[in-house]
Length: 487
Ligand code: ADP
Image (cartoon, protein in one colour):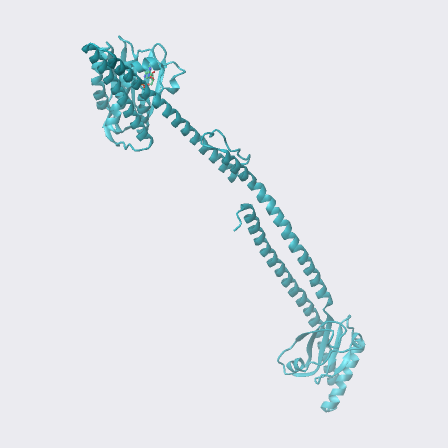
């Protein structure tokens, strides 16, 4: 088993090419051989047929010129042979080897070219023609068959009605055809392996070139560790499969990088967040243990400890909620809910809190709008937003809620007259544990998770949550969720 993709591809490519080349060369060779031989045979037969026809015509003429003399077969034979001999006085063989045999196989006439040798009698072929089994026969004679060099010989009858007085045999050296074929053969034998070697080398180089980025990517990938995810594979400049693979891997590494960083930051923030109340609790408890405190002091200390514990469990609850949301373990309902009713249900309990801070809580608009979603989570969302607004608005301020329809969307706004959010903080307030002023905000009971949960709820309802603010004049939080058409 070869483990290099380069070698495998090159071998496959080479192997296929070799098979095709061999096939092609054999086809060319066979086809050429057939075409050349049949062309040569046809020319040979053409000449033989013409000669036979001419002789037949001459014999016919000689016999019809002397019809009055009743000839015996023997006499006729003599006349016929005379005709053949006469014919040869005028005929030319054009370099071919021509021989006229009588039906017994004896040569009657020979072309000049055959003066020293002649074609040996082939009784079997001769009989096949004489018995009309075949009209033409071909044979290939080698040097041993009493001819000077290998020859192709055609035999055709001289036909006078059903009578065959002579056989015409015409031969031509096969040298020309064989030489042409041999040349092509050598050419193919040299060309085929050369093309194969060139293509194999070319394939090896090309495959190597296109796989080079893969090797580089492998090396880069090996150097990436979980602590060094900022490294990226260098994507090849081309937009081919490998280029796309590199970019896809880079995007994947970037996502992993982001999520690793997020997890790291989240763990650090969470530990820090949990540490603060724990330190407070421990400090308070130590003070209580130290000396004889008045019972009311002990009560106050215990009260404070209970408060910190409550904060702790709220943080832990929120953390649990977020990690379940991250793991996609929370199934929200998707049923029609009247958003205006939910808003009112969230609004009312807040009035007491606002009253305590002498903040005016108001409703600017409240349209009846149905959305598809989970009533409990939407209630939690609106509570969070109003709670934040009351929390961060100083005494005497105003917090207003409105719900209106805008085309296909239910638009819920909560705005206040508080200090607002500085623009440099605005993009981050939805992040986990993010607080604009951590000291102040912690005193007010926030852990920086509320808006993150709010955004998760909105996004789970296929909506958006945005914040706008003019520092010093307050902040506006806007929820947009697709509304259901009222029938
Ligand atoms: P927290 O639990 O601290 O309130 P949130 O995620 O709800 O956390 O809010 C994140 C930060 O955004 C808050 O710490 C606060 O600084 C700022 N913030 C949220 N709502 C308001 C608002 N209505 N006015 C001013 N600042 C706000």
